[in-house]
Length: 404
Image 1 (cartoon, rainbow, N blue to C red):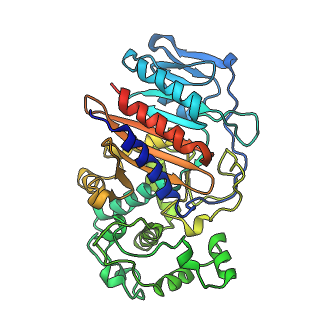
Image 2: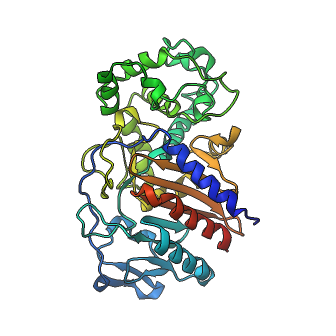
Image 3: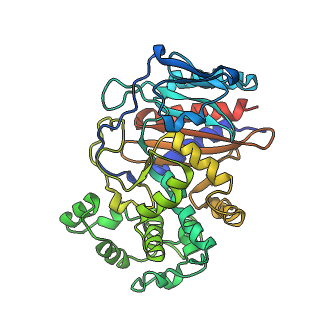
């Protein structure tokens, strides 16, 4: 592979800024839901025959992920596959220097490197680890897109249908297709930016951010705005597209968005610590000083999911293995028309990726190809926006440069 690390760094920074330009996508109040503490006295060999080693307090639902390697005294998992030795050494160096949060680097059949760095869960005692739950922000969009494409696959949605079918009172609905929403080419303005709230009653703006404004009230407000550009003429990132897709999903399925994702995504992928539109005791890491968050109600479809790196690995594996959508829909999902498609972008190192950022949390989900054409999944979650860009850049550049 040829690499352009300066372009990679610039892309990572711009992607994080793009996902965080609205400062939203998160939801709920953080409280305690902590994974058990890890100590070096709790290492237990599960099966000496295959060298599988786990901590006794690794949640049972995740033990199947960790085989052919071991955890060290710091709780960092590394594979025994010597072909990844240099990559592991450099990843550990980068994480030790610049990252605080949880990391997962894996293929379809093994976890190469995983652990947590330089941060504590809300209890102030438990180090962050692969089971720590974060908000994933705009990485949510690939889940919403997959849910829509499942309905396309079932014949219940046509991506070429204009959205006046679902929003008959929208003056511009007959010019915008479902495909425009999926590819961020609709021209619909950003509902989480100042323009959407300028000149309005501050009480209504507060109601919007606190989730007490109804969908109908939000739609009525949206209907009063013109389009920023002719639909289909260009790409402009707007969370409104995916909020509307979540509403379409609810109309078509007769279920709430969160119920549909639970049954058709989280349960199918075996993601026991992931949730959509949850509030209350959800994340297990503090917000590091960021207290005011948009609620799930106004960010569903665009940035409402909570997850951890283990669940995200299962999501990536299932999606790329055809367990969520068929080959035709997957090809459509990753077509990257105009540089963006269905919750995925492509960076200068030719990897599929998407970042997410809320007021407090930053996430990155990236899929590389190794020399043999196999998928390598890199997932990073942190609650420290201040150091996120440098840490994420270091990990991704290391994988790109050294991946066998």
